[in-house]
Structure formats: structure tokens, C-alpha cells
Image (cartoon, rainbow, N blue to C red; front, side, top):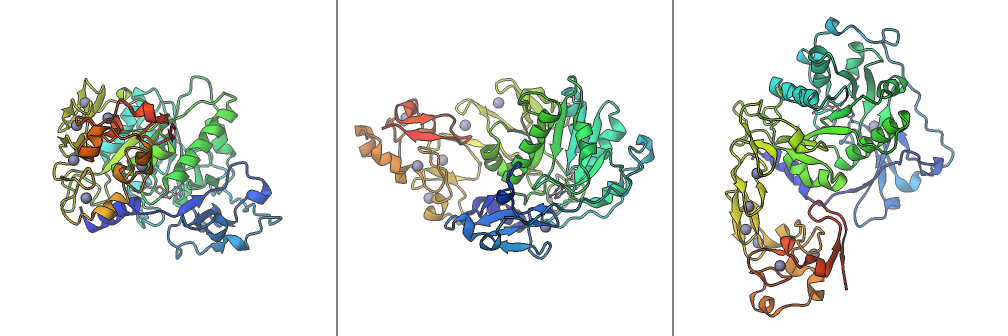
Length: 456
Ligand SMILES: C[S@@+](CC[C@H](N)C(=O)[O-])C[C@H]1O[C@@H](n2cnc3c(N)ncnc32)[C@H](O)[C@@H]1O
Ligand SMILES: [Zn+2]
Ligand SMILES: [Zn+2]
Ligand SMILES: [Zn+2]
Ligand SMILES: [Zn+2]
Ligand SMILES: [Zn+2]
Ligand SMILES: [Zn+2]
Ligand SMILES: [Zn+2]
């Protein structure tokens, strides 16, 4: 893994700043101050109270790029009228421009590659064809391209039966697309810089319409923000069409190592094994000198059942009949885990002590009860980042779990602590899959995170 990828991965693992967003229907007193990019986000450390934090830009992840910062204690909320003056779409009178008239500008424009803001990386031809194929397969009639400009131009050119609308922070698209198919937009706070009525008209449809949101946010974006926006757009769509709570199909392109974060926000999302590549990103690709040994780490997360996607039209993928989903050709099905376990194109092996499939180069640490990287492993540091298999919270492992003290210990466990399931003492599984869990816990869902209550 290159240094830059390591940093990116670490950013997902280390302790995070907590955030608070402005709710959609916030009363005047609950509104956040706005910067030039719409309502700001309240950031505060875990050890702080929200009122000791500060407000900062939602879209620019570097204080040099948007200078707005305000200590929370300074913001009185009260009567400051913050409605940003709406700008006008420069092609306000041009409406929808004929399909054939536009050559995809992403092919010639200078991509805005700064990772702290636009992180503009364009799909390669395979990724475009794959995404378009899936939309056709699912019978999608309308696609909201949220930060997916090249996909927008591809669909408008190649899929005549699909209508598309582009929402993007890069305002240059306004000189190519009229107000009926582009709005300058911030997906981190669902802020429309222009009049949003043309977008609402787009969402308003007939009962036979099938709407999908395709988004590919910068990987530095907090998943909470994107999830919040996706929920807001769903609500808007449902309200405009006067239908009860109905989900919209979502394609969310993101790296596989963000899996747990996306799951925490949207447990209904699953990850497809298809590898997404970009033309202007040397590390997130299968080709070139800097390419990664196991190919791009970027995947498609979706709430569409995975068996409804079809990867076999693409090279290097197969169908696993046991999982009933498509997966990479190199993946093997593990009968012990009951699934195809590879997450990043590597062939995983099953570790009996972990009771799951692990990366092939990992070694098992008895102390940590998990397989982990051989080099630079520090038990205490590693354990502080783990999710406990008993109580489901992050920051410790099972042998240090407070719940364990309360669990009545069996004889087997007191002699063989750590080498067996700490709940029942059997050796052939660990706590995650113990049949006796429900004796000790009230839980709704486990690894997808949710509530786990200790009974007793
Ligand atoms: C990783 S690129 C995805 C492009 C996509 N792969 C394609 O080829 O169509 C991110 C895109 O989101 C846009 N973007 C970045 N931050 C945004 C934000 N806060 N709100 C809306 N769009 C944003 C960028 O301008 C860029 O077009
Ligand atoms: Zn800003
Ligand atoms: Zn399988
Ligand atoms: Zn396995
Ligand atoms: Zn192991
Ligand atoms: Zn260890
Ligand atoms: Zn625990
Ligand atoms: Zn057990």
C-alpha cells in the first residue's frame, strides 16, 4: 500500500471528530451559520461538549480553501437572517440543450483534483459501461448524478430511455448544461446554489418512473453527511410525488475500506465486488506503474439487492450460486463463513481462531484474538481500534469487555480463556456466532451495528 493510501485508510480508523449537521426542518434558533457553501457543520472532539466546538465549511476539508470558522460559543443563532442570495444559472434561458450538441467536456477539461475539495476523478470506459448496464437492467428511468458528471454525459449520450440530472460543486458544468439538467450543488449539506425548482420538476414523475441516485463523493467526505443528504433527497422525492416512505435506489461509489462507516449510516447498503477505475487517478486503477497489486480499492455500494446486478458481462467476474451474487473470478466461497469472503481482490484464508476469513498475509495474535498485519503490530493500539465481538462497541476486545464480567463464566472458559468462545466455552466458533448470544443479549442486528443490550 502506498503512503497516500495508508494515510487515507488511517484517516478512517483513527478517533474521529464528532459532527453535528443542521436538520432539514431546523427552526431558526437551531440553524447553523452559513459560509459561501451553505450551512456549516459543527465539529467537536469526543471529550468536548458540542458547545465547545466550532462551525466550519461542509465541503472544503482544508481551512485554507474556505476560511469560514466560528467557535460555537460565538453563534447566537437568533435573528441573523442567513438565506444566501441565490445565484442564477448562466444559461437560464436555454433550458435543455439537444443531446447530440454536447461533447462530454470531462474529456477535455482540467480535472479539479484537489482531494480536500472536489477530488475530481473520472470513470474509465469500463466503469461507465458497467454502471449504465446496471441502470438498464434495473429498469431505471431517471438518474440523479450527484457528483458524477462523466456518468451524466455518458447516460445522456448512450441511454436515450434514461433522463439524467447533474448536481455538482464544479460550476463549470453550467456553461455546458442548461438549468433543466444541472444545478450547482453541495452534496455535503444538500445546498442548492441556484433555484432548485427545475430539479424538483425532474424528480416529480409518474408512478412508472424508477429513480436512482448515483454518487461518487470525494473519499475524504464524511459518510454521515452523504447519508444525511441521500435521506433528504429521498424525503423530497417522496413528498413531491405524494407517496408514502419509499426508498430510492442508490449507487454510492466508495473505497471498500469505508464499508463499516457506510453500514453504520445505512445498514441496508451492500457492497458489490465490481472494481471501479478512473482515468486520471494513478492509484485507483488496474493499469500503470503505480497501480495496486489487487486493483482498484473502489467499489459500488448499493441498496439494490446484489443478485439483481449482473457483473458477468464484464471480464473477471463470476456468479457464486451459494451466495447468489456476482463476485470477482479469483474469489473462493468459504463454507465455514458461508460466503465469498475476499474484500479487496486477494484470496482470503479461513482462520479457525478468528472464526472468519482473513487476508492471506495476516498472522494470528493470541493476545488480540484476531489475525492482523505481521509488522508494526502493537497489541494495545490495535485493540483500541477493534469492534468488540460481545457488546459491539469500538475500542476494546472481548477479554476486556465490561459485559464479560457480567456473563456467567462456564468451567471451560475459566481454564481456557481466549482459546474458545467466551460465552459458551466451545472452541469451534467465537462470540460473534455463538448460539447462546440471545441468552445474554437483546439485539436487533450485530455486525451491521445497531443496538446490543445486555440482559440481566
Ligand atoms: C470523485 S469525482 C466523481 C466523478 C465521477 N467518477 C464521474 O466520472 O462522473 C467527485 C465529483 O464530485 C464533485 N464534488 C466534490 N465535492 C462535492 C460537493 N461537496 N458537492 C457536490 N459535488 C461535489 C466534484 O466536482 C467531482 O465532479
Ligand atoms: Zn465554505
Ligand atoms: Zn459465495
Ligand atoms: Zn471463512
Ligand atoms: Zn486469526
Ligand atoms: Zn496483538
Ligand atoms: Zn465489549
Ligand atoms: Zn459460543
